[in-house]
Picture (cartoon, rainbow, N blue to C red):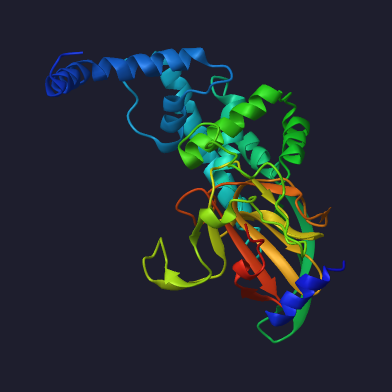
Length: 354
């Protein structure tokens, strides 16, 4: 796939009158009523059910903690059932992780969010069904390897590798087929809301779109900003040496970070072929890599949702993912990398100027 000549040249170059009294009175009333307000909120929202999964029930199921004594018995039972199911899912996820290779991993919050949306308030499935449920998020592939015996002789043996599925449409098809469930669009939406609440602390994610993100912003040489025309004002960490925000130690930054709300569309920088579209727990989270030819590639990390698959061809400006804060991240943003001949380089050299 040919790149624009100008870009090739770049590659070559490299209520009371007194306010205080009102506040004091307000705090006194709040202190007196807060236990009742919390209990009432939990009770009412649990009863609401349906499309709006209750924040308190979700967080109690995922993170544990004491369930308020005033919670109706049946809802206490639902939360308890979900906690027990999550423990079984943890065991199944760990078993599947042991069958993975390289940096592949499962997004356990995504798995549990889907399970919650399908089973909260329903009869808990059997122990075996939990492993079957996790299996719906992977494909299994038979491979061979050479093993050496104690006497020095070698032999070929077969083994099974688990490969994560990033296409949620396929995951839902697997669940319907294997577990004989009918999954509604409302349940899928609920699963997304639960995931966003647990992952980001806000049901439905953050605000999403930012000014300039609704249309591609492409320079004369054909390079498209991954987040639109306002990218320069969104840069929070440049390429190169910096103090790591998690370890607080000097560490080389392999790309450029741009702060954007969860759900912001991420666009392909150039035409190319998607080589990676998967989840990596230790670093990029959900991420996409695109090979643009001429030894140029780009990477888009910490996404909340992947909209392309490995092997798919894209054009400059195509939406390939939605931003998020998955993986090794301190908040919603895009980690953007440009690689030339396999070496990471400063994205600022290629991004279009405003």
